[in-house]
Length: 227
Ligand SMILES: [Zn+2]
Ligand SMILES: [Zn+2]
Image 1 (tube, rainbow, N blue to C red):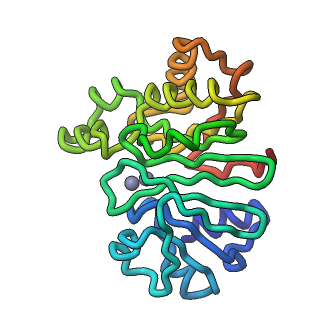
Image 2: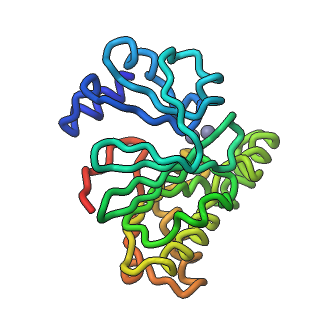
Image 3: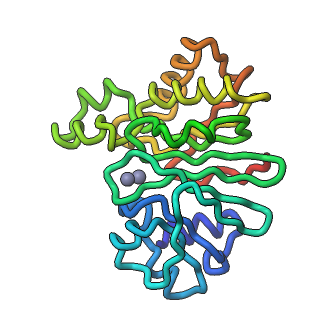
């Protein structure tokens, strides 16, 4: 919570003035601090019904239903079911009249449900969790490695590259992409960029020309961007 407040402040955002918060799933790295926020503000929390059931933190529930958009001012957000070992994990399409963004992390494979949302994206925030070799040869216990590599775990850099190649092929102009949810143990920003770049090139997609690739750091907030 302290870190969240600090990072928001650094970006000129008063966390306690935020009106709505959308939860992807109930794992601790995604809901830490929510209890305090709800207690000290008028924050409305949105999540899938089963996610609320798995979270004791929130009493007032705004339930998200997969594929049913919710409108916040001029912005429409559509929840997309994904493949992760949580109760009802979600990715999101965020759009207004002119632009479309996809947020997709914490999914063990490319979910079929995402297919129809990959067209004409301007911005993609996509998981590139691990370099497969680093995970396989790294210090994690066998069962954890198995979980991460499963269909209900996390996307590898290579998986991420394959999804991005498809996104580029379905776009009119080069999208901007932030690689996100990088593992501290099994990935590095430069390795993620290299692996994803390699997977893209194999499909004839050139980073820099066909897509703008960046890495979202887990240690500091990314700059505010407009698209
Ligand atoms: Zn998770
Ligand atoms: Zn996570």
